[in-house]
Length: 75
Image (tube, rainbow, N blue to C red; front, side):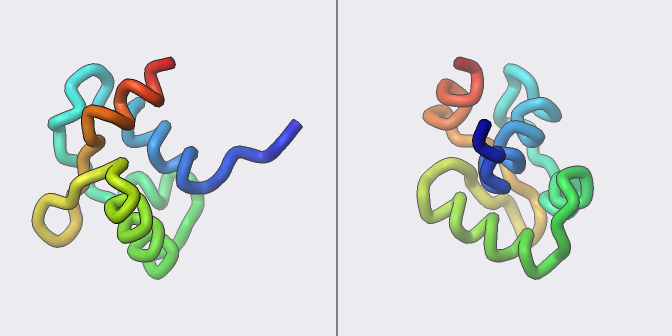
């Protein structure tokens, strides 16, 4: 069984916190802490997930899921 990628863990945890209302903004550090990554890793991961179109940034620290990734995570 393969280990879940850290990006997938981040997306799944963000989805769990927002549920069906993906427009809720969540502090990315809160998600990172819950999945066990540190600030520098969080910043890099958020930049990667944003460039891939999975999340959107709001202000300096908040993020939310895009519609496309919500569909992917719900499956």
